[in-house]
Length: 386
Image (cartoon, rainbow, N blue to C red; front, side, top):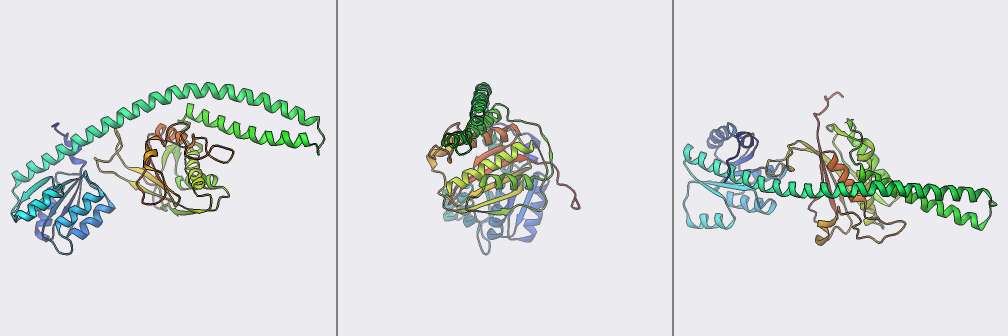
């Protein structure tokens, strides 16, 4: 098993749950000298609340505690994050406790009173496991990203050529239609037909602009201190006049991001359009954002936090599990094609733009409706008075 570098170990986040104040203070101080962030909790209920608020890489918990014991805590954590490392500290050697702990998948055991050598060995073993899992995940993500980059490069060249020829043909059609309209009476039936064809041609031009975005997603990046306004603009454009309520959960102060404003508006517009099309009879789109500093085991491959995390959650029918692997594939759509429905390029364009900005877009777990999450590298928070 590979040895984790000291910088990686210092970056790990640990939750320590212990009801004895003296033990919690002493062992908590010991942990803080070794890890980047240590969260202390007095019992399982407080520990579970802390874990839900800020997932960690390693949980160390006592067994016997008021309100919620360690085994009940582990059971809840396993349901939330099956892969997180868990160490159990106990003064008891009861067989039923050990059997239940093994059934729950406890990774490490520490017998009280805690001895420094044993603790150091367990912590190093846990760090090695986290490091190995992180490397495996990063390799898999890097391979997927490399394949996506190769596909994007090929598609970019193709789309750039198609967009050029497409726009030239459209310009010729538009010129011919405009010329024909000059020779028709205002109440001519042929004029009405040609004017309808102009509407369709404008939609074709919008499709051509999407081809251009796929060919060159990076755009011109500048600091954007008003990301909340960018999100709201994109959502308003995406929802249009649809009977969908937008519910906002945007913080008063959001970190700036380095981005092309128009392209980020397009990302949020595409996500809102998808949500609106999934709820033709009306519904609710909840848009929330926060600053997310992920534990080492959850950070996107090759990147470190913090990130601005923007989440779009709608009340529509949701995404079927078999469709998840294809959501960002060009021309994949579950909607009927036509004037008012999708072409299958919206999420592809959004994913290409976000990735070119050093971020990530993904479907996130949802009990009801569809949920998408956009991660963008965050800059420092502006001063409180700004």
